[in-house]
Length: 364
Length: 71
Image (cartoon, rainbow over all chains, first blue to last red; front, side):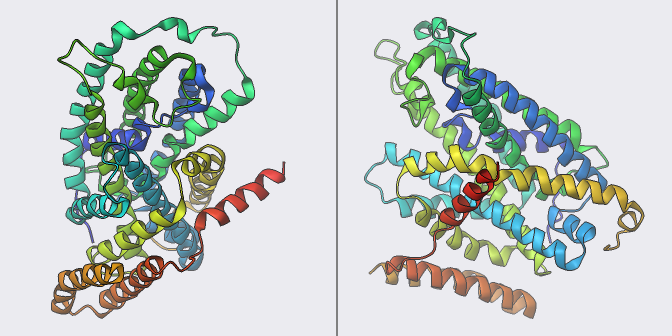
């Protein structure tokens, strides 16, 4: 199968890239308008709680992926059924990320057919997934620090046009809107880190994945905080109401004389690289999970056919970007709950009650 | 014309994967590959021909709406 090993640091950085992925452009908690920062804080806290649950689960079954854990905890048939649900979730998530990425890229290259963008993007991800999680993690070690530096650079340049009065009034909060935005932020992207249960098996040594998971979420949360503050301070009251890509709109306004203009291209590169890493992790997870589900010797033969399915599903699902946004705001938070909260919690509870057979590596 | 592009893409995919599978002589791997390959090819051709394929989003949204209606 895949015998790659990654260090806890690589795991944490890969998690940062995964969380930044598509959320770098459409920020978490956008629905709360000028209170997005508050929704984001709630989202990070909820994300940490979820991540600790995932880490405990991963630590209880060292060296096992989510599919193998399901088999051990729920037995052969029920375990396979739950694994199929999870593989569907990861595959579907991959189609959403791909659609989102291409929607953004078509702003820059409007005349290129969407299918061409999708196929070529997915071919790069297929190549990364084929090389294994170790290679994807090494890519993230190079790309995430560069993204962080670029993010700080853009934010520093935006300082002259920031107006912190846009955060006022702080006390006037629409609680219902904030709650929905916080739910949105905790599910997109933090709860999506359940996908890392397909990667956590590769952590080398006996290190508890909790620290790596926590570090990943905190670093990503800090980057989101920087981006959110920048966007609100630059864009003001229209933030999150009329804009599909607030980061893009904010960065476009930065102009330093005639020398530094069109910095949004830097944002495109950031988004593409983080999107590539997120898509590669999801793609790898689906391929590896499928191979384990059908008990085949390697996950590599299913990579390309799965890629074709991802492209087709991605093209099929939404007719416009507004439909995707509508789905992300109203449906996705509830759609994620069973996969990120209910089933992992149930798995944790059952594995605690039936500890001895699992410790011996037997199916229940 | 689009169908032709799909057939070319899938022919390249087969040319890339099948020799390795034949060399390893793992029948199970081969069957699973053929299963996914056929499914992907079928979906691609139907999609290009404009056949109305079921959209998973509709089912997911219907499920979430009925969940919301419980409260």
